[in-house]
Image 1 (cartoon, one colour):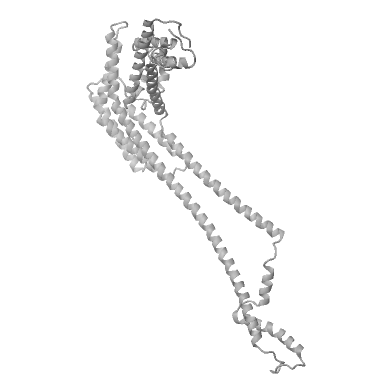
Image 2: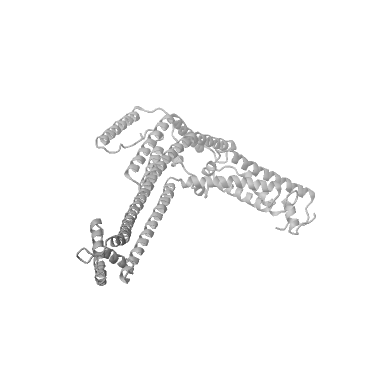
Length: 490
């Protein structure tokens, strides 16, 4: 941004003082908001008037429309006998409804006497809480037990709210009477009259708004406790569901492991039996054959003239001995063992190999499907957690918190930059835009708005700082200008 070629010392000093004054003002306002945990822009936004009033009002949580249902102008006075009789009849009718509901085993209807100063506001709170409960019931995997616990939480919150509102009923009546007085003052105000009338009305409005803050805070605390109970109920149910899924997976894995372990010992047992038979046969056959002498059938050893008979007799005796051993031990004969051994190393046929491959592929597919189901269950549980958070989160409250942070830190940053003279044109332009938004909440051409002369003056001063090189005198912008080769001597 270009700046004038020459400025006198007085002009330079004036710009520096203007920059320091506006910067310190912004910085001080920002730090005050930052150090005050109770500060909120809700009151400022709710007082907005003019064409942008609806936009500013939409950024503020209305605490169940308390501004239209609780802040009602109502003159406090003597209650006549007729109204007292109507209230008594209403109480009798409500008592009959409660008794009938208990006899029928139905939920007890919850009502507030319409003769209470907070009746309409309480009805709206109950309706909003009931809507939250219905949304809670629509969450995935909600069981009947959780629904019953949530309904009990709503009943407790309702009773707690009614007890509190009954305790502060006199203060609410006084508050509504104060609103009635403000309304009368507005009617009696003369257009173009003395300025003290407007100041007095604004002071009364601020005082009345401060009276309602403790009630709003207490109702918010009761509501937050109600939401905390719903969160705890859902969390406990979710943990129980996850435990059930985990137990089912462990049971399935254990069952599969038992089948594998049962098949393996059987195969090992068969192999051990075969090895025992072979070992016993190999140990016993030579001993029996060697110890038993060959005979010629008459019990005498064969002569030299009969060598062939000895060989034939030995060949006939060996199978007989092995058969006797097998009969004595109850084991299969060596011939059967040999036949079994000869069939073991046989290769599988192509059909058998194909069937086995298909079985392995099917088992792998089942394992992959089980893993996908587990991942889907975990993803669904995460989605449920996000859903319950969405149900129990007030979006307007989050918007207001964001507005408060933006306003606070913009004051601090703009003020600090102006004080040290860093990025002065950008900081000054940001401050001017903020003040323009403040003026838009109270347009001077709308009747009944607050004065914004001070904001106008400061906004124009910031525009002057943005249009000049105010940060290059006694500011850090001088060094940035020199860094980029734009340093000039005045």
